[in-house]
Image (cartoon, rainbow, N blue to C red):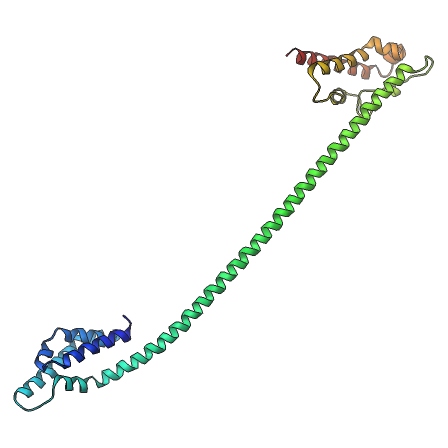
Length: 276
């Protein structure tokens, strides 16, 4: 109950007591209840004193009535005594109405602030969502570019290897079909490396070249047959037959030995794979 309602409740109790005899009103327990409700919280310590004064006044009226000295009733007492309190009640009622208006205005301000805060929160959330979406799209774009670049590199590499393998086969075909008097040097031998050049001959480059010549879909038997043919091609006797003793024992004899050694090792590995 607010202060205005509490005061009115106390005043209503006093009005009820006003219709009783002064002596009965003075001894009523409702007297203190009325005092509790009519006094504001700042004057609660005055309750007992106020009740005591009311009792004395009512008892005096009762005595005067019994002795015929007065015709004043409890109602007339409250009418006189409560004039100031009644004025206070009206004042409090007015303050209550004004306070209610202030409360309504304050509540409206609070609702508007809450609404503005919610709108700002939603705007900030939307901004974060947009930024996150932009970052996600940027990352996705980078990943896609990297993927395409990787695909392009793989395609370029595949094309380079296709060209290298084709060139290797064609040059060997030329070697086999050349005229007997046509000169062959160590540098124009079709070396089994990607570049086909003598300086690039080593164990790793030769092994890589032979493996690239095979497809991942080839069976173990087919791989063995391919490597077996290359091993025979690079055997010392075959090389001497194609290029002559001077080439075999000359400046490229180390490179020829490297190629032959790698071919034998790959053939052994392919043979094991075929037997599984």
